[in-house]
Length: 413
Image (cartoon, rainbow, N blue to C red):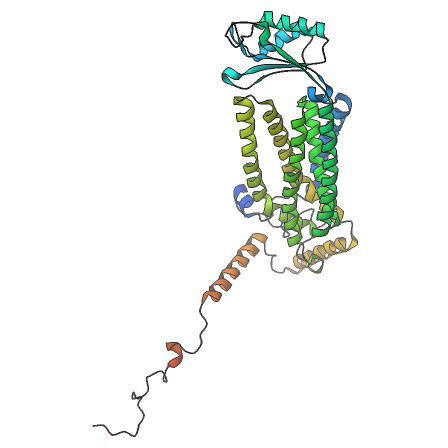
């Protein structure tokens, strides 16, 4: 037996949506059946999460030197033969070390640009050998504009700092999740808090998994950026849930829509807002990635912008395709909501059997509501008649002593 939310278009009427895709997206009349097709979203997102978990478990991450410790070698990017390119630096470091370095990147821009090579911890003798080999291949220029081995510097990096950053980040994540759970439980309800937390964990897991899968370097800036996406992900979910709460107020006593249809309508009504908010939020992140990493060559900005961009996209997807559909499944476990859905189905069957008037679509209902609000606003703007205006003085509004057609007892001279 088909349920009311399995064969409708999400607007609670079963009628075909009117207008083009952009029009329906803008008006948010429930034309996109997101909740009704939730099983396919579960399958797609579930496969993505499984791939990410498998990558983190078998492949692991590519930690930066701040986490594992090692030796960092720096030199000017200007050589005797001209600008030292990224490929030249990688090839020279590979020849000097006998294997690829952990990371080779150009940092900065213009005349202050430098080459930074990170590798495992080197012994003093090995470090001297590597620096000499790099000088012979690249010939970096010193402050006087002449090639010199002194232009190549080195520093030992301890992995303690990165580990401390990770520890503090995990503590912050735990505190954040506890506070969010308490807030959502009191502001919304228990099942909304559960669905929001599942979507939040999905965002964190997918972002971390993509870093493992693609092989991006994980630095302390990446950990900090991962914490910043939590707020954005939660904000987008709360916006949708707030609309769901509004649409489902007192729904157990109504028979026009099921809980699933009302939730789907809420997603549609907030879909355009979610898209606009996401685009506005991604623009500065893309600017940070392009300007900070592409033009200025600052690795910290690149790591920060990259994790924020991936996390925001994951947050957009989860707030639309995971949080609300999961909330519907959790709510429909309650017999009260299943009974209400059955009443909706019976009411529609009776209407179809009796040939009653068609159910008004959400687009028409919204338009009718807008017209009612305009009429009420127009009525409220009309000034109240107090009896002192000219209209209220008909027949009795003439000044005293003026003739009104009745004898006054005075003689006319």
